Image (cartoon, rainbow, N blue to C red; front, top):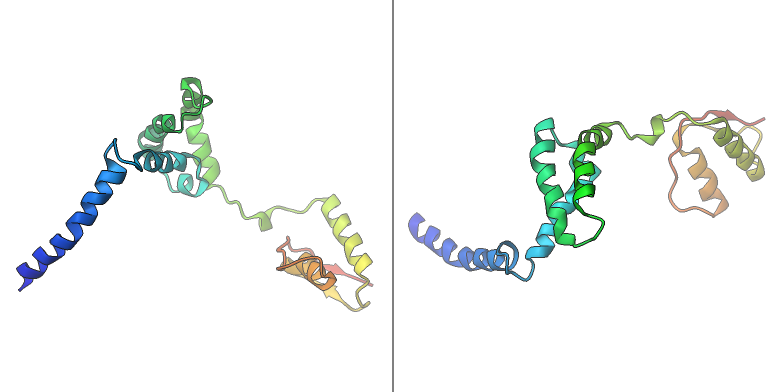
Length: 159
């Protein structure tokens, strides 16, 4: 019975696999170049880069850099690919950094502009805006925004 199911499964899946191979994996396939572009473009994906080990940089990304030829952009010449290979360790290191914008300290200019905006809104004197949704609350209440916008924690007591 198991053998029969196995053969039946193969008879259904084999044509689909052959079709995929013909379209995407054979160099003469209609979608071969699209698949190559998709794989090569991952070299610019920061999420993909953040998962890479040092070994992946030299193996996977150098291979992807060579695949950039499939785009046929004149800018993806040998000089560009050579520079990209040299920068790859730095790109991966940057992709692995914490990019949580909530952890970046706000500048004096940001605080000043935000406080002016709060004053223009003229909240009640006992209103206290805390935390990450202060600007989002202001935008939503004024009708000029959609979803709340997360901001750095800025505790503003209005008097």
